[in-house]
Structures are given as structure tokens and as C-alpha cells.
Image (cartoon, rainbow, N blue to C red):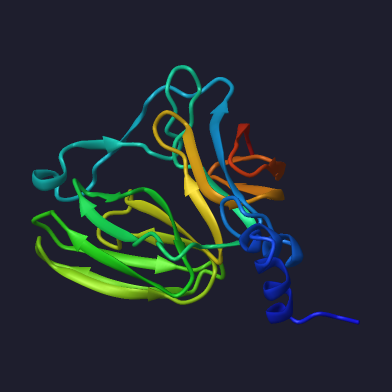
Length: 239
């Protein structure tokens, strides 16, 4: 004979163990949510990092200067790589989601790389006293939106409707490039020290996928335990 949740509560109430007993009866843990959660922390590196480089400015030198940093691969002398996107396959975003923002600043897109939930709104702004266009292309090379930014201080919102890698370009300044990884899966971007963190990850075994605009790495499998931090080392290679 089966017991309803109400009958189970009454049975355990007499023993004074309602919270723990109900958690066990429901097949869930009591620490960190339904199954417990942990944290994934990692560092992204590469062998033989390239030295810092610059790109020639071919228009609006009065505003943009003569050269800008080449941000295709941003890595320090020790090989720590920035701008790598690490995603948790099949793990959705929490309620507090990142708010994507593309800024035209110093004739570069800032940030160069970001991850955003599908169907979020991206805020496009500019700090430069020159005409920029923020022109996005999806992974089919179709235009998502193309916004003229003729003066600093302008703010425009546009939706990111479908998952995939979005390329951002400026039609007026060919060296400007940015990327938005639009994803249903939770993710993070490595910083200048190569570090990234994913918190509140459900306990269990997960697959990490890694994206970089020039470098590559195979997916990684990690196991997260409730209340613990799992350390991951990711090495990127030239694709």
C-alpha cells in the first residue's frame, strides 16, 4: 500500500524528524538544494603563447589612434588565456542571469568575448566620438541586427533570439571584432589570469564544452560533489 506525502508527513511528525525524513522519502538531499550543489573552478592555459601584438588603424585615427591591440589571442607570458567560454552542457542558467553589454570603446568592442542566455536583451552603447556600427552575424552568417552608433552616450537594446556563436563587427572599422556565445547552458568566460568559476552547480557528473575564437579543446567531464569545489585545468591548442 502506498502513502501520500501528507500521510508521510504525519507519520514522521510523531518522531520529530519531518524535514530530514521527507527529504529522504522524496529521494533528494538536504544540503545546497534538491541534490546539493558545488563549484567548478578552473584555469585555461596554452603552450607557447604569442607575444602581444597590435593592428594598424586605417580610419578615424584622430579618435582611434594609429594602432589598437590585437585581441585574437589574449594570453600572458605564463600561458594563461583570456576569453575562453566554458559551458555546462544541459545545465540551465540560474535566476540571476548575466546582462550582456556591447560597448564601442577606444574603437574596440568591450568586452571582446561574452556569454549570454538565449532570448536575453543586449545593451549596445558607445563611448567614441565617431560613427560606429554594431553589426551582428549568427552562425549561419545572417545579420542579427545592425545598429548605427553616431555619437557617444547612445543606448540601444536588441534581443538575442537563438543559441549559437554571434560575431560582432563594425562596418566602419574593419579591425573591430567581438563575440557573444548565446546559450541555453550556463557558462563563464576566462579572465586575464585564465581563471573561471561556475557556482551553484548541481551535484553529479557534467560535461564542459570550451569555445575560443582561435584555439580549441576537447570537452571535459567533471564530477561535482555537494559543498565542494572541483578544480579543472583546461589546455587550449591551436586549431
